[in-house]
Image (tube, rainbow, N blue to C red; front, side, top):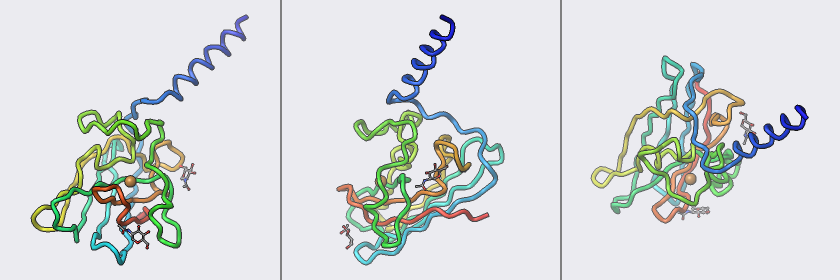
Length: 182
Ligand SMILES: *[C@@H]1O[C@H](CO)[C@@H](O)[C@H](O)[C@H]1NC(C)=O
Ligand SMILES: *[C@@H]1O[C@H](CO)[C@@H](O)[C@H](O)[C@H]1NC(C)=O
Ligand SMILES: [Cu+2]
């Protein structure tokens, strides 16, 4: 009897874990390592740039520093994400899969910038704002993200994945892989 209810409790627990809309937990055990992703130059876009993800002294969260340039002067916002697969040798940004989404939130509802824990972990522009450069074709930002992990094997680990920049129509403009700097 005891065994049976333990099994039942485990099953209930598992189904709760698998349910959609699980909030991303704050990552508190990040390592002292830096990752960097540079967009591979593409002939059909002027967009270039990189994202550097640095450790914070506390190990709680990570510091994201993004720099993009060559942004078309058409007053449209670009978005950028960490995607769930690396860019293959042929450089095709459409081979990088969907967003890093370890808690199974899905794409159905847009990310609420005021509740970033409810967003897909890889949705950097959803959580922190789009690429927006109406005047000078260049955009720089730095922020803390609480939900990314730089520790291999953790659900929110991004170090073997890719950065993808999309146009306003969601087409994939440019992409590049994360590499560890130290
Ligand atoms: C990235 O590393 C994680 C381990 O943290 C592994 O589970 C996953 O399969 C790797 N992803 C790819 C696309 O190699
Ligand atoms: C850029 O070129 C690639 C390869 O030819 C193509 O797959 C992609 O759709 C193009 N992107 C845009 C925004 O035109
Ligand atoms: Cu994307």
